[in-house]
Length: 318
Length: 280
Ligand SMILES: [Zn+2]
Picture 1 (tube, chains in turn purple, green):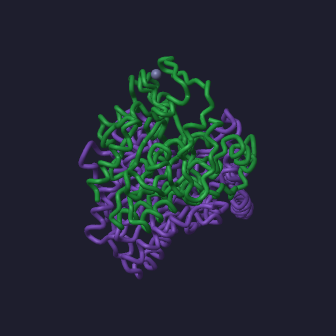
Picture 2 (cartoon, rainbow over the protein chains, first blue to last red; picture 1 turned 180 degrees about the horizontal axis):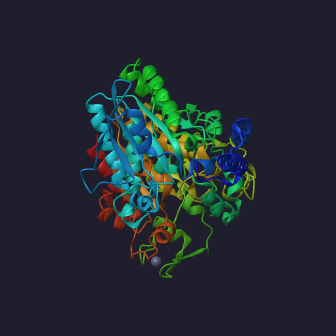
Picture 3 (cartoon, helix red, strand yellow; picture 1 turned 45 degrees about the horizontal axis):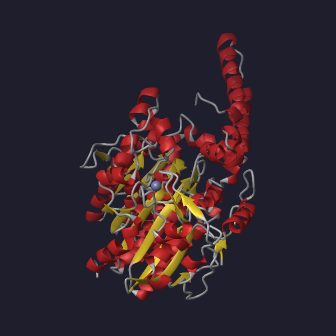
């Protein structure tokens, strides 16, 4: 870990102390291993303390941590060399912000689909910052239909700051593409599991987010708008993003409490970026356990439950 | 429109509505400055006779245009927004709702009516932009759902007139999931083999466009309406260029293949009835 968020600075300081001790050990030959052990324990405790008390805004920051694993990294780790990536929507082009293809997990072939962000400046632009165009949503739907045809379950990994609001996106029907996915995903005959692994922003996230199980990694957010945009619209400037993050109730705990998602997947100590392999393992276990439950249901029963679950969302006064 | 205060309780006729317009009120078209009496303007379905500018109108006006004899039963007329997230920005959401109800006389941003269009049963849902920008919260989703249920029960078409700025931010996650909920209900309508007609009016953007407004068996629009997913300001900021003339207009959306046809409001009912007759 090299990049620290502001609220992680106590962890950074402890790690720096450890480094200094190691250097002095090399230079002076002094035995410092007990001191290092103490400091390493302190790192764990501090990390635990900080990560047990994250504010909603801090969770948003963790969800966007530049070292956080992205979709392809999770898929590759979970499928262990069996992943076959597919491209294209068969109509316009291949959207680099949306990836998909089959891979094996626990002896099953699974269709994995997800938004993909880039890890460096060049790749961020190549992946359009994880903001899909209509062809991305249509590529996703094409692959879902393929999975349905061969009776394979679908797992979507959601990580997007939103659907791309560009000129061509409007020309090619961004609204229709997302709407079509919502409608079609409701009726897919195979199990569908959707997992928010980073940012779950609005319709762009929901466009691959209709599933029998919708799960959130612990340090992610899911809402109708980003805290920054919410602040801009409701407070007329971006100064209120921290308040907006709290008001939107966008954390995994809040979303679960409001029954808008079905479960939370715990992240390793200090967040997924601290131990991507362990995070991928948690993800894999959650997927297998959900698949085991969902495969017990008949097609009719499963789609019925899926539709009824979404129909029950909302709170009104009669 | 203060003269438009008729409360609909069960079946209520609306025959006198047009005569209730006080004399001496005038309407000036904001586009071409053509002046007519408010009565003439209403007779012409709130469309300018000179330049065909379509004034933004609300659900009661649309119902008066669509339903035979202006008769219809309102579905879930008393339903109001709750405040599931106790949301506060510069104002708290509860107060915002209260003030908006008082100011507009509307309960929320969607009204649902069941009546007849050219002698055939139909459920019409219609959004009201006057209510927090026609934003979609739990009430919009739930009323839409009840409208679909009513259509399935009466075995008749479901029509939705959209006019919305998008999500109801103060309901955050609940608002987002109304996109899923309305789409889920439309799968049930489709399974029952019943027509769903989406009518897009000025403006239809955001989460409404990205859910039920684009899912019609037919998507039809009034002329020159703004229709899009991202609002024009956001698109402009993204591309850092001026937008081409007519971008995101009904005509643009038709040209790009996402509408079945555009029809003037004054001819909408006839065209709609004709369309529905082919889907029986
Ligand atoms: Zn005019």
